[in-house]
Length: 81
Image 1 (cartoon, rainbow, N blue to C red):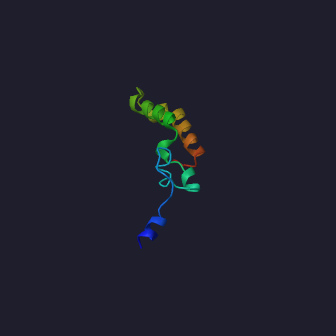
Image 2: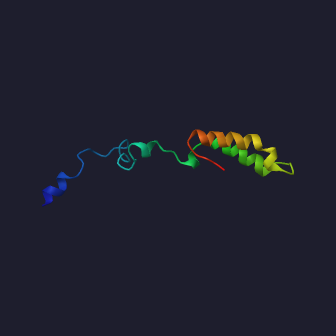
Image 3: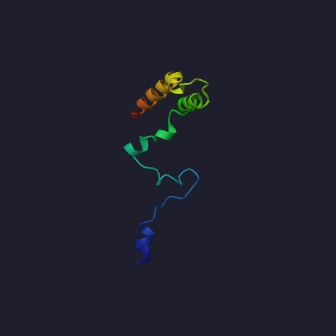
């Protein structure tokens, strides 16, 4: 019975390069990105404009940055309202 358990274990030696390979999803799941991980520069510029705008209507003042962020996110398949 002990020999059956040993035979089902992988025969490769763990190294720094392959420790997480079994944890990474394969196929389409590995290609899918999370919304928090894309368009970081556009998001930072948009947020900075919205937070620190001296305008009475920050939303109108920062429209161009909001549009850049939306188009960047759309490029990755995310649809923003």
